[in-house]
Image 1: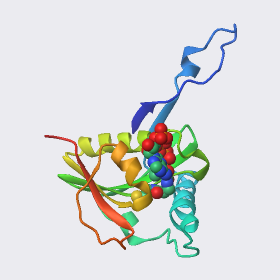
Image 2: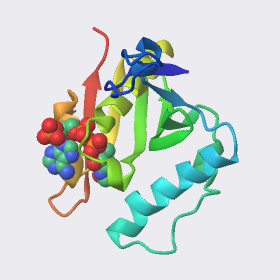
Image 3: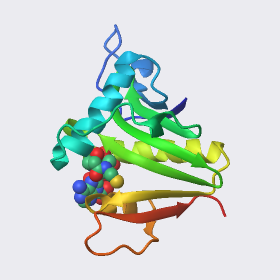
Length: 169
Ligand SMILES: CC(C)(COP(=O)(O)OP(=O)(O)OC[C@H]1O[C@@H](n2cnc3c(N)ncnc32)[C@H](O)[C@@H]1OP(=O)(O)O)[C@@H](O)C(=O)NCCC(=O)NCCS
């Protein structure tokens, strides 16, 4: 499990002073472990990556790629609440980030950046030196902000571009 400190929350201890333990919010990137996690994983993917792009009724939660050795479905969570998803396909020295999405009501609050940072740590721990992703054109600015550069040439009509980032050497 990988963790990242989150934004402080305004909570107070019993005597009115800030409770340091409650102030420490921790985001974690974990493998879905139970049915609420799996339901949230598929719901975010279906909604954000398919239905919001007009692709209704085609999302396949049982797609064989989800079970392939080396492919790691992950959720970004704060406690029980799932906020984002990614699948990290490991093929050292490269890791490919697939189907990155943040819940639609939580976008543009820094969660995608936390998600990619934790995914990068996961890839490093698994001896990867480079990250790659087939990035939707609308998300190129986000990946660029996270240190990726466009490395593939794609025809103008293609909906995605290949972006990558060296994480070692
Ligand atoms: C792309 C996505 C994962 C980013 O997650 P997020 O939590 O919204 O991103 P962050 O808040 O961490 O954004 C960090 C920076 O990236 C850039 N960015 C993020 N979304 C952007 C957008 N839609 N347009 C332009 N820049 C964007 C901004 O510079 C942003 O910083 P700012 O908010 O201070 O300006 C999320 O918006 C999402 O799920 N989008 C729909 C699905 C998608 O496109 N997934 C990627 C498939 S390849």
